[in-house]
Amino acid sequence: MQPIILNEPFRAVFYAPFYIAEARGLFAAEGVEVRRDTAGDPNKAAENLLSGRADIAWSGPMRPMLLRDRDPSCPLRSFCAVVMKDPFLIIGRGPRPGFALSDLPALRFGTVSEVPTPWWCLQDDLRAAGIDPDGLTRVTDRTMAENAAAVLDGTLDAAQLFEPHAALAEAKGAAVWHRAADRGPSAYTAFYATEARIAERAAEFEAMIRAMAKALTWIATAPPAEIAATVAPMFPEVPAAALATALGRYQAMALWSPTPHFPRAAFDQLQRAMRSAGIIQGAPTFEACVDEAIVARALGG
Image (cartoon, rainbow, N blue to C red; front, side):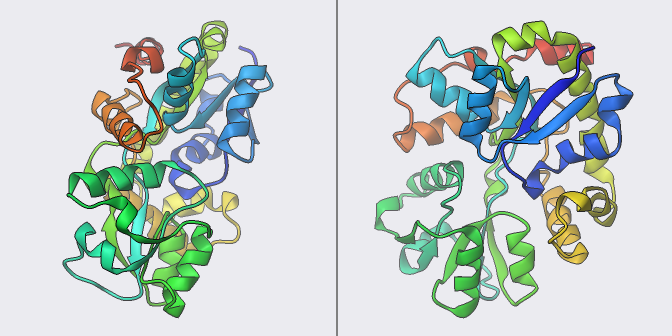
């Protein structure tokens, strides 16, 4: 097998299964050498795939969907489901039992600026609840860390963010009010590559899928402290207790797919959110955007 250049878009706790496959030697055990490189942002990872500078990347299935909506001949396809629920949370300064999305219009609310998908999904949830997203008093241009700090100092009432920001804020008195994962299936992260690379590197990619299947099985039941210790080298700035809290929360939410098979319901939810946000105009099909055949071959059905 040929060595594989793998792009991660950026570093994130909810990507833990990928780091586990590397740290526990699961790729190597399947006979494939994977050289991970950090692209820096999802756009760069997609560019690297299209230019041939990378063989494979992980990112949101929104990217093949978005690019195929713009150009049906786009060759990128997702496969090997990993994060199939929404990892974003809403926190406030202290506990708020009974919080509902209908409370948001009365609050000063900071939304994620670093990546678009969490707002696309949340605005769709708001519309489904009969709430106009444009009616929110919303801060849109700060980082998650800045919004978390603003919640703690009282200049924001609530903020949308992912881990470990929530666990770090909790340690200072904040509380999680809402878990987007409770919505149900949502297609957040999978591998993707060009159709040509999928054909050329089929043996290597199938080996990587088998490794990810083992990583997903392990992370579903491993003690959070052990998961945290395994991925800690990826997050040297995060205290061990906060990292374990973050991973334990994601594990309890069943954030990660039980298998690499891609759930159609997760794809459909993401497409609906992107359409309601006006990000895509058409409806690229599951079959056009997702390659399930390579997963079936890798796992034997």
